Length: 451
Image (cartoon, rainbow, N blue to C red):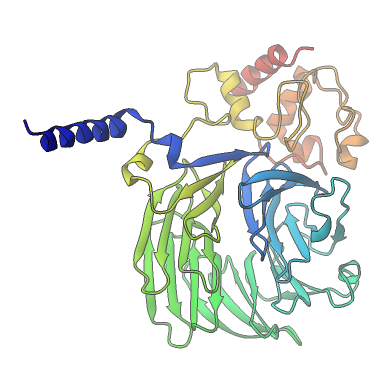
């Protein structure tokens, strides 16, 4: 064998060794954890320095975008957060959640642990999307109460609630909003399958630029390029001309809802995420496919491409967010099942522990330290008065409750539902019809929560 042939054999052996024995997960993606519940939204500051995550655990977390290092946790909402958005000038951050509140945070103080938000009230249902006007003069909010909130900011965010107004016209929940480039008009999408176009001066409905047979979850309009992109509840991912409705791109999984959309004017990529973890990336120059892969074991609630155009961040049911390189990983790696989650264990557990995982673990821990969860720890819950754990911000309904948590009252909580047993609380409505499941859950909790 010649020296050249021998060298080639050595390099081939090293290549095969690395391909087979070096774990792909070490370089395929990075995970970053700071929340105690699913992450619902991602927002990037205009200068690209900050990333914000909005979570089911009632908090938003500020990260440095370059290395995705946790900076501060923003607390103020009374329920799960669904959305976060920076103003175009980078001076404000807005967050919205299931509590129907819009919170405005001064960006210059985001790293201050003592930061206090301005609270805007007016919606009667959860807020699922926020958008600032290009001139920074207004904030719009999309709510499942069927309305669009318009919050003037010219006089300062502290006066926005007093000057607010609400636009109605959608049939059902409103899912997304966006201002026109000149800030004189507004686009909105909703459960009724339409993207509507409004005159802001008087709230007049002018027309629908999209009429879809299924609800529209997310959308983006680029007026300069004459395009509208949207994702719908029947799985369609579409990009079309606004002027003549001609389609530039249309893909999708039948009946798998599209939950997220990334589009930044001037960016080279557009991305969609669906309820089964699929991420679809296309080149906005010619609408060709760049990536189409499974990024999570479950829904993709939010995704964004980082300014370097080399990686994207996705968020979903997990406590962590994941950063994926766009161009460097083998697609076959992503066909493997996702990780086990605390609320969907893959190992064999007792029925009581399984019920806890499914019904309780997203919001509650079983240890004395209950931080980073939407609900209080269940450690020592038996014999405790409802609303009686020191340091947890209970709703007034639980603070004034006379319920003592026992096997009987916990059983009743899941038999009749929190809306009946503890009306007015923040606990999500859920019931367990099977008596054996309830009995097994109570038995598990009695054992697992002992002081």
